[in-house]
Image (cartoon, rainbow, N blue to C red; front, side, top):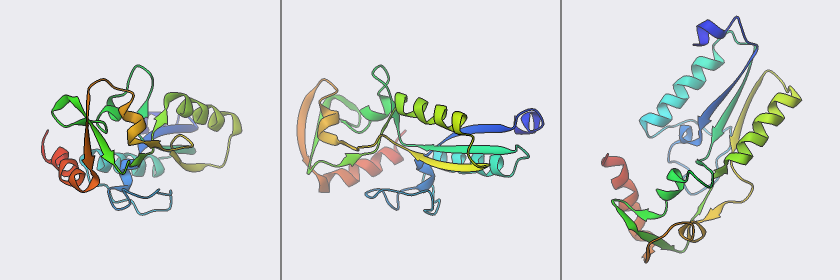
Length: 166
């Protein structure tokens, strides 16, 4: 696709992912200058795509590294942070409540429109998320089911289990 379009377009906006940063700073905010260390095949695929775009002949590119995106009808990536894996009726009420960076679809649209309108410099990378992080306890209220209070020290094994199982 890049080879086909490199002579036909002057600007590409690519939706990447904050998963390009991996798990090193999972509990802290990442910045665009942080080292890329993807810990999943998905994150690695985004890094490869970013590299292909930056080495293409397309004159201008904007790379948007998105935190999980949701809207009122599609909360799949939010749901993963609420329910106990494999139990869609049991919600985790984690204590103390962690915070998550998420992106409403409206936030993404707003950023894309600003990029198109402002015609900034040739190469731009953005980390995209809503202004304020969401507490896990807030997310629990978005879904039906029974709540189970879970101390944070139990969460790490559950988290790593989701990487091992399909």
